[in-house]
Every structure is written in structure tokens, then in C-alpha cells.
Image (cartoon, rainbow, N blue to C red; front, side, top):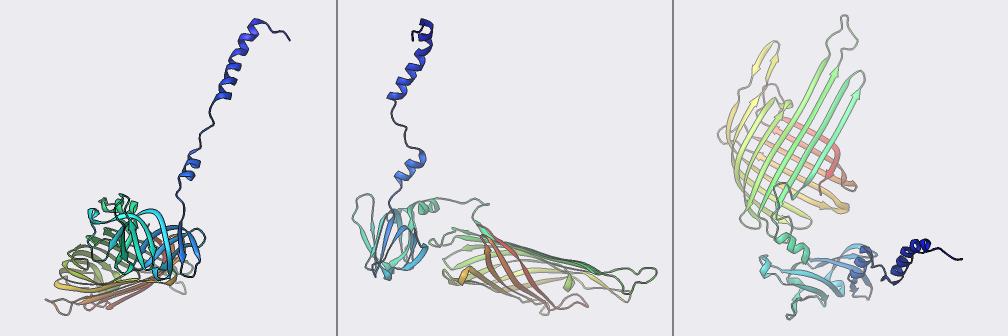
Length: 400
């Protein structure tokens, strides 16, 4: 079919575009494709019996290899059970008894065989073969470099738990009980392969209850409703400065309020020394001892129309305490602490506290917690009991 000249001019841009597209190079690979192509091959772990796993070597700690397998997930294997392990990644090797300093830590690729760890530096230097018994940690280089050269801010590096629970009753009697607590820890540095520098501990607990009971049977005119209120509050802050991997100096302050013992406010300011007697992957046991100033203020009480006031007291005393943490099977955590508070200037005003808790994982970072708390005050306000015991259940959120 014959076309006019104007029609040919209109078709010219389409013909040019067709020629350009026909001669254009193939479309480059997407970022995902390029990333997949650049992915290094899997590490290979061979057991003494010949079985093999492929995946990624994560670390070597205390004679054990942590290996993230493609099929079995993350597993921990004793070096004695490994025939060979080769990894193309870059790692830092930390020997036992050697202070961690970036310029003194060898880095390179890792091989494990015959009970030894072989590290080959990337700079072409001669490889180093270290018996597994002399290896403290092997960490991937990226994590090592990030930790060794980083100074965390005041709002970072916090770990711990947040717990809450409540019980509500609405019937002839009306009752409400609420519990909330926070246990926070900031340890610097926050890795087990470096000696600790300092540690900050924050503990806040509040238990509040209110029970309203009418007179049964009802009277005319109606009798006033009996209301019972309970409130137990604790807030504490402790700062530890380490002078060696296990010995530290400490300073602490705490505030307590216990309606059940007639204690309106107790303030403690002290300082002393602490020692970590046991510390490993499963458990930790600390002992603390200090000297402190303590002030106790009490509620006034009314009995038969007579107001009774217990005077406030100022105490020079101490806190002798231990704190124990144990990681149980199935990721269950057990914590326990005991504090004895002798009073040196008023011997009768001694006190003690005992807490214990089990935290059991339920879903991701949510756990169920069962705990007991027993506070003993030898010289409470007049007419009040010496003991204050609590049994608490709640839901706990574990911070990252």
C-alpha cells in the first residue's frame, strides 16, 4: 500500500526506536541476582564418623563449635567430634589469657582439624596452628571489629525484662491487684570475650492491691464499705566499676515503700565492693558487701481512737548480698538473690530480703514468670507484721 510523505515522517521515530532496542545490550542482573551470585559457598563440617553438614561457621568457644547448618539449624559441637571444618569467612582468634586488643588479635580464614584450629591471615603471612585447648574464642571479623571499635551511648546496650500481671474481681466484694516490674542491665562491653569495664543495674517493682467489702447483711442506713489497700514498691540503682575481670567497686541507692509493714519510705545510699565467684555460659554468682546510710520513715496508726506514731530512724549499716543466675534446659531462666542488712548503730533495726523467680519462654520474646519475694523488717511500725511475703505470676517481655 502506498503511503504519503507525511505518514512516513510519522513512522520514522518508531523505526528508530525499534533499531535501538534491537541493538541494546541485555538487561543487567537485578540486585537480588547479583547478591546471590556474590554469595560465598557454604562452609563444610565433617564429623569423625564421616557425616557432613553445610552451612556457616559462627564461632568457636571453650572447645565447642557453633555451626549454623542449612538442614539442622544452629548446633553446638565439640571439636573432639569434628574431623575437619573449613570456612572461607574471616575470623578473629582470641587465645586464653591474652588481653583483647585489636592490634594484637590475629585475623584470617579458619580451619578445624585434629583438635587444632588453623588460622590463615589474609595478608599472605604464615598460618598459625593453635591447639583447641588454648583457644578462648573465634569470632567473625565483622562482629569483632564492630565491638572493639564502638563506644555505646547511654541509651544503648541495655538488656533485661519487663513483667506485668493483674487480677480483677467485681462481685459482692470488689478487688484489683496489679504487679509491674523492670529488671535492666547495661554491661560494657556486652560480649563475653572481653573483660568487663562497668555494669549498671536498674530494678523497679510495684505491687498494688485494693479490696472493697460491704457489711453483710446490709444495714439501714447503709454501713460504710471496708476498704483495704496494699502497696509494695522498690526502686534500686547500682553501678559497678571493674578493677579486674571478677572484682568490682560498687555504689548504689534504693527506695522502698511497704504499706503492709507500716514503712512509708526507706532510703539507702551506699558503696562497697563486689566479687564474681562463678561466671560461665550457664550460671553466674556474685557477692557484694558495702557500708551505707539508711533512713526509715513510718506511717502513723490509729487504735481505739489513739494515734500511734513510730519515730523515723537513721541507720549506719551494711548490705551483704549474693545474686545467682542459672540457665536451665529449654531456655528456662532461674534468678535468686538474698540480702542481709545489719544496722551497726541500732542493732535491732536489721532487715533482710529474698527473691527468686523462674522465667519460662512462651512465644518469641514473651515468657511466663513465677516469683516469690519475702521482705523482713525486724523493727516495723507499731502493730505491723515483720514479714511481707508475695507470690507473683505475670507475663514477661525479654528485651533484645
